[in-house]
Length: 550
Image 1 (cartoon, one colour):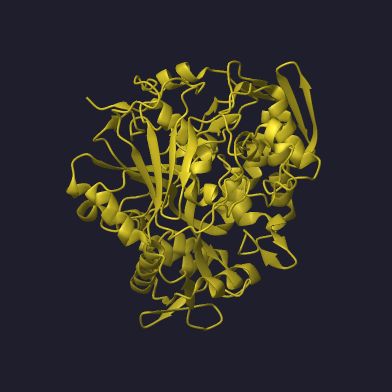
Image 2 (image 1 turned 45 degrees about the vertical axis):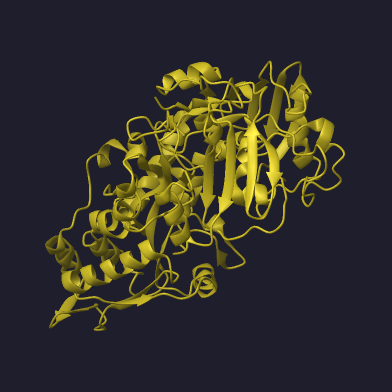
């Protein structure tokens, strides 16, 4: 999200007009409208649980919980990175992002007919504050208070880099959840328990599919789509077939050879790539050879072909990151003036000169370090991660041909890979970043010691450690002014450019496959008012925007 101290209040109707879409024009539950089948490739889900707070509930795995239980606002992880108030008519942060003021939207009812009020918002957050609900989102709440239709939420720490976690926290009805003994375990499957403010209500649940029908009293207006079917297929191949044949309408998946396997099957089949502020990134173990030498890391940055990563490994489903700052196009406004326009390219001659100046030589075609040892390393990605497995092979080829480095391609199972990345026993891995919607995500992920607890890393896998950078990261996250944050950014960004602690390859995208046979108004490359990923909170924004196709 963009740097801001206040999020401007807009109504749902005006928000949708701004995106170039209008609310669905047909009546809710219109029998003539076609249902949408939303698919996942996760195999059979055998146990019903409609609890939105449980990551392993069927509501979370299928993602149908997102259309039942709504949140205060929707933070766009792509496009303009903006925020649209949702269940709240307005949301506003104080200067240091330790306090959020939200005004409950008027005219909203729960799907059982009860009135939605500010007390429901306060109750939902108080579940965490009182210790009844586990703080899995690290909200770090201090107090919650209500004055009329206004809720004030105070935090023990700044939420500048965690705004979406707060604003996407799902709101539940106090009149039902006050009687739920343990919200951490209750499946919420009792009669009349799956009650939300969302555009759809639960109709039926089986292990094969879950059906939801349009909420006839939805506060956001009439809905063009009368019914949603959530189906989980056995794997990506089965999901791709279902999408290509029209058995499924909407999904998020990386589909190899998508043009031949999906898009060419029907001109109405669409695929949207939505870049985010995160990136697929090469992490290097900075504690051991060969990556304990910044010159070697910089030489790699001038040799690895990011365009090949996007075009070949990701089959176009990404956006290159060439900036020496590591920031992609969405965060261009956070690139310091001195680094604006400074970009890496594939320049093997420059890379070789950097190595020569640092005391490296060549024996035949093989690179030799200043200690007289041939340079080689392993790059590790779990087997079956086809896009990053392809990138492993590309990097091995590029570094062998360009610099004479022998790269071993390692493809362990998930467990072995996970243990190595946490314990620091790897040499190089490809991994994602913590996406905070701003520059902090990249720099905390690659340079922040806070991620290493009990000698196990959750990010900063290379174990970069510079007290000045650590102070700057903390300042950026907790600053009470834009000037303070800008000064901290300068320290972080300069350190990243000078030390090359990791190499971002391409924007980590949200993907969406859908068809326009029955409905229009979907996000597009020209109008990324949301990503087209149906597992994201903004699915409610999309469903409100869809209209029947002419």
